[in-house]
Length: 147
Image 1 (cartoon, rainbow, N blue to C red):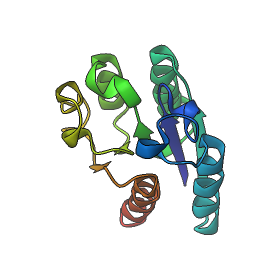
Image 2 (tube, rainbow, N blue to C red):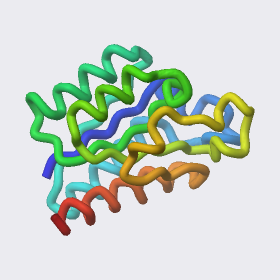
Image 3 (tube, one colour):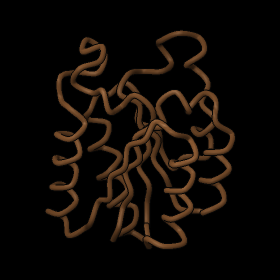
């Protein structure tokens, strides 16, 4: 099974940015760890990070049209609160997706409490730190195997 991990804006700064909120692990370290978890269970994890909304949309479209993706794990970053276009892309491809947020978006600034994606996500992992990615990945694998 192929799974796509999408990390949105500013997540390339993991390990350098607001360490008290996001931790010390870099994005490449996180991705390496998640790739190994997927491989150890016989699956392939494709990883992208971009600060550009249109690149996230293209990756979602390609997940359906080119890459035979079974599930998507996405941390849309700030696009969580602003992007109807990403919501429409996720709805359009009809691939189950898991929304991840390192911090608890419901216990931060008021503008972070609304997500355009949560109501259509298979599951949301918020406030569990980087562990939320592992939980989402394992849930995606488990749910695809149960199909």
